[in-house]
Length: 291
Ligand code: SF4
Ligand code: ZN
Image (cartoon, rainbow, N blue to C red; front, side, top):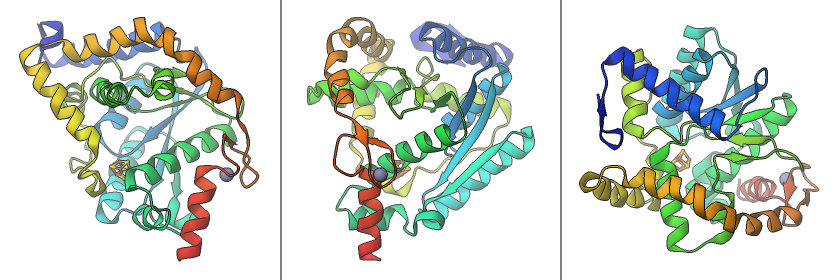
């Protein structure tokens, strides 16, 4: 397996060790998880989140999984089976929340009712439910499978719009407190080609199909643009993202802090929000009106 940005090639055992080391390095350098803390891993059944869960377990963390059923047809059914299979093989604890089962709507219907793009309705629901499950379950931290390609693409989009509040929040660790669990992204030092190879080498079955709602998602376009640059200049993606963390984040973090200052508990669910009612409660009530 060659990793051009490191100008290195690895045999199978060295490659899986390399992946574990990159995760450990990210956890240590950004102080993501302290020894003995309980981690809730947001798992989707895809390569990134299952690789993350596997690596955290191998590194000896107390890491349970959280799977959220989105009600997106066969895609959701299959991703749930891959997640359950992974948990069963490792005797790991998996918490499941079904949006259709508990809130009475699926993501495509909820998005239409709230006049939102499906990924926007899905993203806000997942953020809300991950946070709530972590606080309710007494977890110290929520870990998500965002990798270097994801983070570089999000950064690219935020820079195109010079969205300072989003840029200020785009850090691999978001602190807990004020109704939020700490959130961490331990895969930021690994690309998606690496997490896919890790799963293949470890015999981890994952859902290969993209979510059908992702068509037209602008992040896919940003990823393609960055892949074209990376092809001719290996290492550009990492330089773009890590240069941002080092040099720009300290300048833009105050914009995000300011927004955090305006938070209050949502009257519907108690979650922190800057609006009168939180976005998830709004989505639930719009979906109920329509249903
Ligand atoms: Fe949700 Fe969009 Fe991802 Fe599908 S592609 S799982 S709708 S965020
Ligand atoms: Zn609410």
